[in-house]
Amino acid sequence: MKNPNKDYEKLHAISRKAKVLDGVTSLLDWDQETYMPPDGAGIRAEQLKTLAGITHQMKTSKKFSNALEKLIEVESGKIIGKNLDDAQKSALRCWRRDYLLAKALPTKFVEEFAQLTSQATQVWRNARKENAFHQFAPFLEKIVQMVKKKADLIGYKEHPYDALIDLYEHGISTKEVSEVFAKLRKSIAPLIDKISKKTVNDSFLYGQFPQDQQIKFGHEILKAMDYDLSKGRLDLSAHPFSSACHPTDSRITTRVNEKSIMSNIGAVIHECGHALYEMGLPVDQYGSPLGEAVSLGMHESQSRWWETRIGLSKPFWKYFYPSLKQHFKGKFDAISLDDFYKGINKAEPSLIRIEADEVTYPLHIVLRFELELALIEGKLKVRDLPEAWNAKIKELLHVSPKNNAEGCLQDIHWSMGAFGYFPTYALGTMYASHLFLAFAKDHPDWQERVSKGDLKFIKDWLHKTVYQYGRHYTSKELLLNATGRPFSSDAFVDYLKAKYDDILK
Image 1 (cartoon, one colour):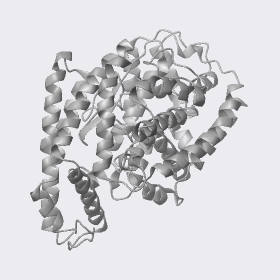
Image 2 (cartoon, helix red, strand yellow):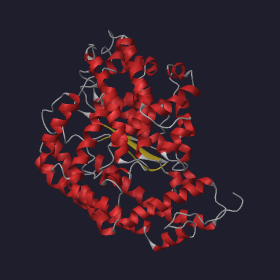
Image 3 (cartoon, rainbow, N blue to C red):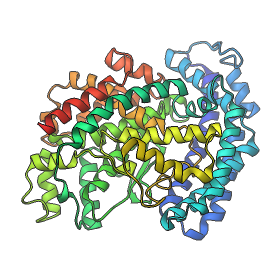
């Protein structure tokens, strides 16, 4: 721009400082899940509480609001700044929304919530390990109370859950999610019935697979996906996750099950999908909404894209299967590529979400969504959660957990206070298939290229279509821009039907 807006540059500079502190918080969270000594939990909770308060004060300060009000009327949303392009105007609207959300929450509330969830995460980890829901329940009760208060403070029109889901997927309502999930549930049920009648052998995926070899193979996949280890790293944690504090520092973790080969592979590919998105955001826009991921749903679309559409495809394994055989000599000698492909895509109801197949995975999210709604509405008490979980998973997937570690304690999200987050997993899965319509049209030879180990062109396409825009567009706008079609679940359902018709024939 020939005549840059000095007020915009000043606002960006103020916002960048807050973003730096957010990055420090991310590093503390990452350390807490990876290398922090157990006895460090107490001071870590205090550190996170302090940082949360300082960052919140910066984001709601008079200095920030004065800078914002020179460019956009906070009350009405009318842009008054001059010499601004469309992307900067979009950034201002995002800044305004973020400011109003932050302003709605008192600093004391933010500090207390950060401290509580840090403590709860440590308790959850031990409770899961010992199958001791009673240890975690008191913390979850406090979290639910504070999450309800958060919804009231933010405000909503129809349902308190609207305020919570909007934090992660702006522009979508509880009613809309319920309708999408109801349609998805109806579409998937007959497919599950059809698949369950077909026997698929996947026994070769289980046995003894040493951790060091699994990690080596994971690194091989990361290299092919163009994950830059000068800007990231792979570590172990109780729950796989991706953590980024800047495009030049985007870390991932995995969880290795030495008795199951695909658990780690799926986690590595999934979390790398998240990390590539963060690494692909514009560095010069760091601290601005234009340097941030558009939503958690779009973020999840990137991880599920890589994990399922690429990582579970036959072309991918046509290239990587010989290497897998080399890493685990003798384990797969008698297994053909076709049988391996069918094995890794075996679909049947199971207990653990992160290990669920593509067909049943969305129902794991429906389960959590419906339980979250019941907790927020007060129809379900925390003490009754294990029983409610077991009944709901029996209803949806016809399986029963042996213990709470397999059931309501398996996810970290509630200990983090992330109510409203879970729907983005299913939405992201559907977003990925919607985006794939455009990708396959642009690259009709994608299967041939992937079968030769070429994955970088996929990352380049995603950068052009998603990464480079930050929050310039909403998720729905990005999907429409890419495909020319409004978002629906149709692309995902059509993909599943076609894939499993081929597998089961």
